[in-house]
Image 1 (cartoon, rainbow, N blue to C red):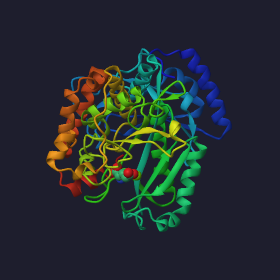
Image 2 (cartoon, rainbow, N blue to C red):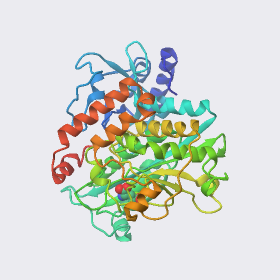
Image 3 (spheres, protein in one colour):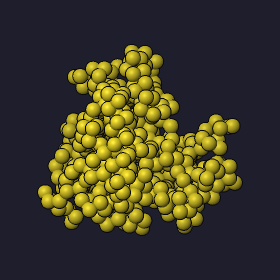
Image 4 (cartoon, rainbow, N blue to C red):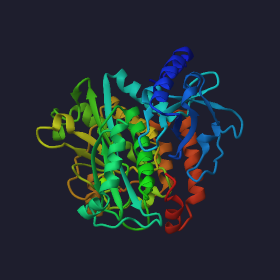
Amino acid sequence: MFSTRLDRERLADLGAAAAERLLRAGVDLVALSFVDNSGISRVKAVPAGKLASVAAWGVGASNSFDFFLATDSIASGAHSLGPVGDLRLHPDLDALTVLAAQPGWAWAPAWRYDQDGRAHPQDSRALTAAAVGQLAERGLSVRAAFELEWVVTDPDEVPVPGPAYGYARLSRHHDYLRKLVSALDSQRAEVEQIHPEYAAGQFELSVAAADPVRAADLAVLTKETVRRVSEACGLRASFTPKFQPGGVGNGGHVHLSLWHGDQPLCSAGNGPFQLTPAGEAFGAGILRRLPALLAVGAPSVISYLRLTPHHWAGVFTAWGCENRETQLRLIRGAAGQRSTAANWEVKCFDLTANPYLVLAGLIFAGLAGIDAEERLPPPIDVDPGSLSPDEAAAAGVVRLPTSLPDSIAAFEADDVLPKAFGEELGTTLLDVRRAEAAELGALPDAELCRVMRWLH
Ligand code: GLU
Ligand code: MG
């Protein structure tokens, strides 16, 4: 549970109890991680026996991490202290997890505080918690899940063979997939589905929906588990949006359902496809802000190589029911299950994004839609990329930003997001994006793919 102030005594007690449990279970090291603005998980590790003191007092981490690019260059910016200053990483002990594929290790996502115990304004996990708090003020909650796609290669970086969605690719890697699901299962990440995807060597995995902070934690944990199990099986896993120029990319689709208590708001209403007014307004708020949200959910120069029409990546400002070419897809599920299955899927995001910022941004956008009682335009039930210019104009369908600088401009111009992210985080996010655009923007596609292939 996030709190703006640390209760050090209570945390020390909880840390001591956790240390005892871990040591009894043969765990002697704990990785504390957070995700930076460039979407990379950064980490410090501590001996399990030190958890009482670490929970209460944290572990040092430089302020400069907020300015890291995915390439490890460091951006400058209005809020940068350069090499000066220190933050403290505090493990969230509620999320402490013994790692199945990394024997002797546990993991906990960290909150970041300053040395006086004040929450760090650039803590993306705290931003998600704040967004959840704003939902709760209106009696609402969101359940969310990230869908992971990745390319598996042999050690020479050649994608593993087998046809798209092909049984042959699954049977050849049956042991790998089983080890992966078993590791996730023992880490309380409930796998819903796993399958070979369209692109060469590509697989996809989805986990059960959870509250937003937990859903983002699961995105981090699942990714690191895929990476570890792949390596243990003599394989490599790449989550890059585009493994090589051309072809289909790796998405990081996000699913969200809106609730009022146990009443589902994405179904059981009288709106289009049985949306309730709040469920519709939440989707409308997201739809309207997806060009700006692209700076959060498709945050890398390489993200825009993936965002091309007819690749199921959702590159038009349109929504549709079960339409895999719209950026916002309403999923209803099978008749009979719709009350709990219906959800919004955002298709245009990828796994170079910081999942905490993604969920915070989507919730802020959806809430703005609810507060303004926004309505959805008519749904699109064809591939929006196949509309003539006149048809697209009549339906209000336009292409999403096609480059990082364009989505940065959309974020800056947005009426809700910069304010909701706060001055420090909102500004630094764009400082990092601009620095990545400057460093990587002119690379030829093949070189960009090579540079980014193993970073996220
Ligand atoms: N690989 C596609 C993407 O880049 C998504 C395919 C699917 O709909 O699962 O987003
Ligand atoms: Mg997929």
